[in-house]
View 1 (cartoon, rainbow, N blue to C red):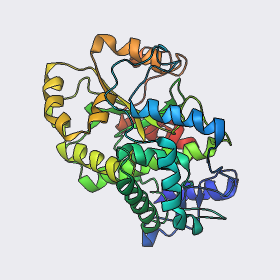
View 2 (view 1 turned 90 degrees about the vertical axis):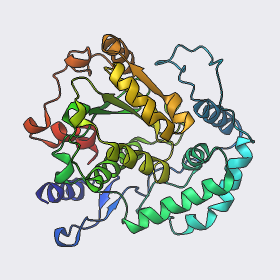
View 3 (view 1 turned 90 degrees about the horizontal axis):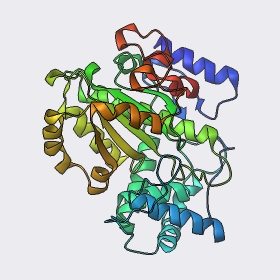
Length: 343
């Protein structure tokens, strides 16, 4: 509660954040956390700009990660995911079908990000361009935001667990969520993990809104993030099927196609067997997004992914390593510098 009050006071007093806390009432649950200020651009594309946007949507749907600077620049010849319809027409239909939702979202602070081409594209991708399903996902998302009065506020009960940290962006401008499995507690309740997941992804969304400009972000056009799951030194007691099910459910229901790539670090035969059990529950495009990295490959992968000066020593860089959850004393140490700056 003290942490939440301090964060609320900081947001109110600085007046520089696009993430507003309307009021703080510890006795009645979470405060209202409006994610989007009136100055955040609504990105609707036309003409040549839409043509570029359409090509990016097509690439992302194909799970093609060859775009530089992270990728090699070579086209992906093994493409199993091709949009079954015209992307431009699909976006146009989404705009029309969700027009009534825009009326309550105009002017002043909003409970969620703009309902624009970026949001529509992510929901279309998640629904495999099934129009009715994508529209329903958007409507469910707007209802979810109204139910929770905006974003999920940071809470010490899950911050102190150190489930994951958001320390930096990668070379593509994507926030990197680093989850160290050796610190997981399999006894953590589904509700605690759900609050952590929602609060962390809401922080990522707020981070994007803080930096959004009027034009398409060529490096990260759909405002996605990267998950790095480090399973080195993890044991059976760190594994939780409940946590995995919660993450899959939340991603599919309220945060569709927010994850660009998933890297599992320190993979051995036991982890590969575990992945063979989990992967059938995961959507085909998500399976393609997931890369299993052996311990010997970790430093090479992370140096490609993150600027060297920001990378910690345990991942092949020069920055100080992240403290263990029990040793974390600040919001930056508990949740990562990106979270601390955004909140």
